[in-house]
Amino acid sequence: MNLKLVQSKLKSHTPSILGSDKFSKYAVMVPLIKKEDGIHVLFEVRSLQLRRQPGEICFPGGRIDPEDVDEKSAAIRETTEELGISSDTLSEVFPLDFMISPFGMMIYPFAAIIESPEMIQPNPAEVGEIFTVPLTYFIENAPAIYNIHFKVEPEENFPFDLIVGGENYNWRTRALDEYFYLYEQKAIWGLTAKILSHFIEIMKK
Image 1 (cartoon, rainbow, N blue to C red):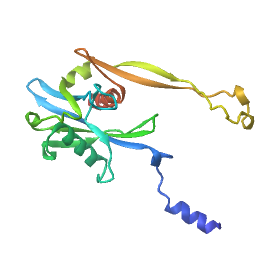
Image 2 (image 1 turned 90 degrees about the vertical axis):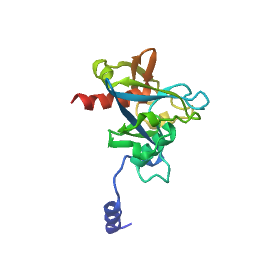
Image 3 (image 1 turned 120 degrees about the horizontal axis):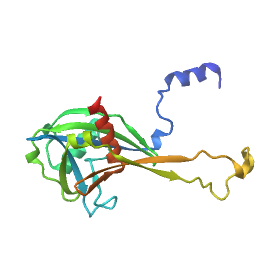
Image 4 (image 1 turned 180 degrees about the vertical axis):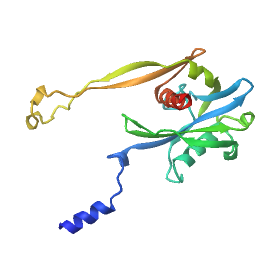
């Protein structure tokens, strides 16, 4: 391989997050509705019939399909499918910061206004129930944050003889922050709470 070919390869390369081609990609929506007492955030309780995380509280969202034009269209599609509304019911769809999960996922969150919340008809196959929380509650109440510590366990045939320090190598350990909001006996936690916390940070700026 000559230098010109190397330069050509580098010039045509578009940088991205290393390894992101192997990540599962999801789009999520933070739905906002207008009520008499102000803006509310809408949440779903996942159907107990679902295989993954039944009964947990979440935002509308799901895996980005190849047919989706982009992350935003995926978030809109998932929201309309789960809440039984048409896409023209959603307005002011804005992107939030995307997230990289330590479990091999990239999450693209958005926020939007649901203009006609009375039209919502949750899909029972995915949604057990919905509820709303005043936005001011999250602005006035910070989440509780707890740490989860990961333990390093190399596989049995790991080549310790190839690294300096061998079996005594000083591995860098990792901790994961888990956010929790509690509202009327409901626990909003995990990625949903982390996305919500980020959204609230934007509101406070």
